[in-house]
Image (cartoon, rainbow, N blue to C red):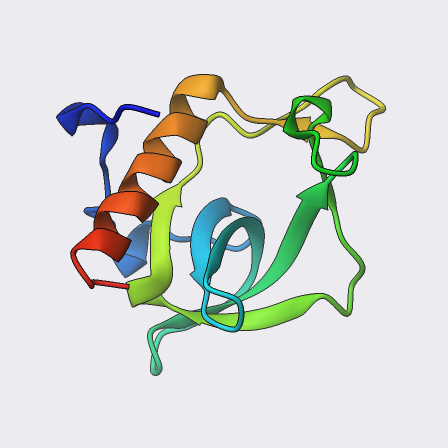
Length: 121
């Protein structure tokens, strides 16, 4: 994957985050990034409580993502948030699967790679 400069974004403010928004963030426990849904905002600690999305099929992101179990939650500091995801949409009106645009997926992956290389995550 070749990253262009305009495919690297971060510049988020905590005030832009809202409950039920979908973000991409680093999960420090395993060093990977995930799509997550914001459940709560903690302004004092500047972190968010999130619920993870999982891939709908084993290692097949083209099938989309599904919200994982209610117990699959964590607290994520603002510094680990990569992007507010704008293209995350249901695959149909009844579907449990969600999809994200390839362009936004590439932007998130490039942002993650750049930050890891720079030692910022």
